[in-house]
Image (cartoon, rainbow, N blue to C red; front, side):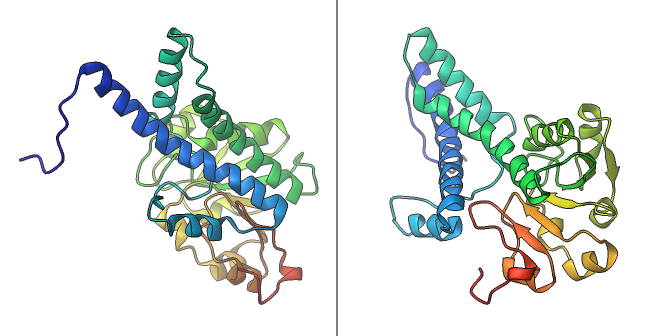
Length: 257
């Protein structure tokens, strides 16, 4: 038996319920990413803000994690469908359009963070990408943020080395001109920066002491806010993430979180 609520409704409402649900979740992601950009300017902490918001029983913590934005097929399809229907009836629907605009900008904003960390010039630099799929536990590359990010890095002159547990073959069809590796440590060899794009458990549990011994790279740009900042600073890594002030190992402080 179906162990879920059942709602009897008309076809038009059923269609809009589906699109509206996915669009609302996408809106939460774009909202928290917009706040993350504000945090980076004001030295606020996006994790604290997300947690504080979710303490309000009216607001769920789901989809309130700052990052490089959403991908896949469902959220973009919902946004596009609602905008298309609204256009058909000559409605503005600026709020829903802004969800996609923010999501697209977040990817470029992440590239700019990498570029700034590498002295404002990516030409001749090597960037290691950890995570290609738009989410963990899949090889799905449809509208994955990694595609936009990698192409933007390449346009700015960077060489790309990439690791993903499942999505390498699918990515190779889209981005044949980058180097792929079966190990995150191999991918990080000779890199100037490591950019984390997917919250795979393999990456969440990475041994940074082993990484330090295996590579010379000391810059982590975390697009999923996976790692404890103080731990990386203590190991000598510079750490940049989403919605927090960048932290350099040479400037580490016991108060850094």
